[in-house]
Length: 359
Ligand SMILES: [Fe+2]
Image (cartoon, rainbow, N blue to C red; front, side, top):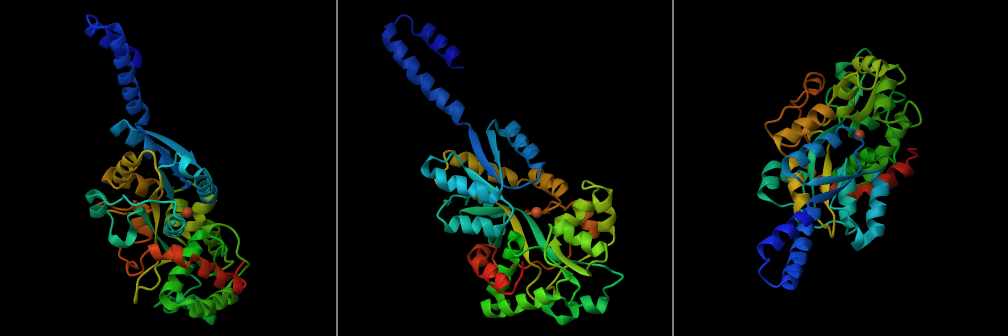
C-alpha cells in the first residue's frame, strides 16, 4: 500500500520539485501505514473456551480490525500486563469472573471508557462498571441426585442453608482457591457479613462428602456416581456435559443430576459474568470499545449461548436449548448484589474459607 501510494503521488506531482514531493509522499505514507497498522486490537483472553477465537474472526470480517489474541491463564495474563506497565500492548482483558475484573480494576490496571450508549443499553447496571462490563452471564447453582434428595429437602434451599447439618457428608464443592467459589462466598460476605460467613464456611466444610478436588464438572460427576447428593457448580457445565462435547461418560453423568436455583425466596441466585476490562493505557482504546459493543450484539451473544452455554447478557437472545430444557429460564437472579462487589470481598472470602479448613 505504501509503495502504490508513493507512485501515485509521484505521478501527480511530477511537475513540481521532486524533493518536496518525496518528503510529502514519505510523510503521507507514514501516516497511512500508521492507520493501517493501528487497525488492530490486542485481546488478553483468559477464557478457556475454544469457540471464542471464531467469534473474534467474525469481528474482523465485519470491521477489518485485526484481533491479536493472547490466550493464557488469568493470573499469568494479569501479571504480564502489570509487569509491562505503560509498555503493555493489552487493550482488553477478557476473563470469566467479575471478581477478577473487579480486583484488576482495584490494582489500577484498568481505565474508564466502556460507557457508550450501546453498552449501557445492552448491559444492566449491576453487571457493569465504566472500566469493565459483563458480556455473558452464568449462575452458580446446586446440582442434586433426584433419587436421594427429596423435594422437601430442596424446598427453600439457600446458599446459607448448605451449612445445615442435614447435608452432613452429602455435599461436594471445589477448592476454596477457585475463583467461582471466591466470588460466591464474597457475595455471602457482602450480604451476611464476615463473621456469619465464617460460621457458615465451618458448616459447609463439616458437610463435605470429600476433600475438595476437581473442577465443576467433577462435582457433578461425584453426584452422578453416588459419592455425594448435592454439588455446587456453574450452570453452563451441565449443558456442556449434556451436549456430548466432553464425552459419553460425562453426558451420561449429567443426565443423572438435576439443577436447583438457590435463594429463590429472597435475593435470588448468585450470578456471575464473563467480563471484558478496558486496560489502562490501551493503545487501541477505540477498537476495544468497538469490540465490546460487538460482543453485545445478538450475533455474538448467540455465539456465546450456543458454544459456551452461558446465559446471554442482552434481552432478546435465548439461551441454548440444552440450557432452556435442563436448567430452565424462570429463576430469580440476584440483581441486588452488584457483581462489582465480588472483587472487594474476595480476600475476606478466602480468609473465612481457609480458616474453616476448606482446602
Ligand atoms: Fe468455567
